[in-house]
Image (cartoon, rainbow, N blue to C red; front, side, top):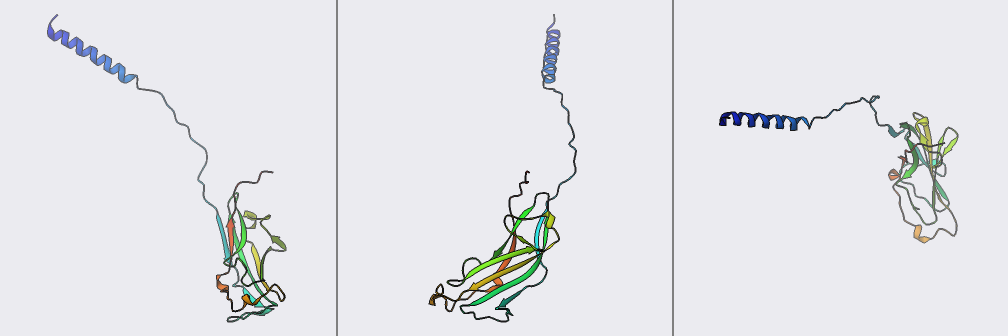
Length: 175
């Protein structure tokens, strides 16, 4: 056999081996579709319905009130709830007014949806979306032995006090 024929046979055998090797990398595959559309995120908002008012012993506060032991300072206002999402949950809370402004004073807050008092045990859900909630913040400055001279000449900026709707764990409730 001639050298050129031997070379051609060797080249052909090499080509067959290379093609066979390339073919061994091929594999079958398939794709499947997933049913469904798009998803979107929910909302949690609290929009003031009215500005609300502060009263001192039942009289609307104007300017800077000066309180003394025995006084009661109360804020009342209302807000519209925005709560959308399959498992949205939130709690109402007072912000910027934590602690006790004066020795012996107490601060309490009450939130009502119609006649139902809202607590952390009854959080806001999507069922309350678009409904109004009333808020009351009460600061009692009692007259008595719990008030001492250290409570004189103190101040609190009322505009720093606010109401917040804060999301809690969105895990679904399993009955």
